Amino acid sequence: MSLPAQLAEGLELLGLTLSPEIQARLLAFLALIQKWNQVHNLTSVRSPETMLVRHLLDSLAVLPYIGGPRIADVGSGAGLPGIPLALARPDWHVALIESNHKKAVFLEQARIELKLKNVEVVAERVESFHPKPEFDIVISRAFSDLVDFVRLAGHLGLQGSSGGMLVAMKGIYPHEELVQLPAQFTVEKILQVPVPGLEAQRHLVLIRRA
Image (cartoon, rainbow, N blue to C red; front, side, top):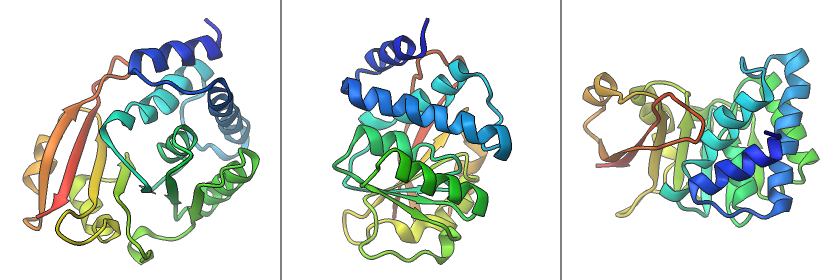
């Protein structure tokens, strides 16, 4: 199956409707990762078909469970999940936070090449970043364990009665990490998220300030 057909099928299984133009830009993003990967080793995944599942579909699978309009992607790496989310939701503002210089340079290049007007690249450590206003959703994918995530990135979420949501993308159910979560944060829900073509488990942990 061709990559465009694989992407279209995956989106259909996720229940997402994205225009042909956005689908083409998602595949252009994948091609950009492949190109940079040859020199900079952005990701250990090499096969385009596997990249499509593990990077694009895995990132887009969270869309039904989060809202905007301000999203922070903590430890963005190769722009995951931030860039797929920004492409799928052009009305959202997405900040890609990445302290690794090499990866931050890639993110800036991707922002320019993909004409992502709704993306901001923040090339600094997450604990040093103090945006105003804060974010509706603070999301991480393989950034760290839950304790470090809330400790380092908890201040990025909107303050106040409703507050911002911290969303951790995890593999298997993170039993041990949940036990160690600081008292000032509470788990709102944990969702098992199916990703088309991926046999491994995926869970979303939704956390708010207590």
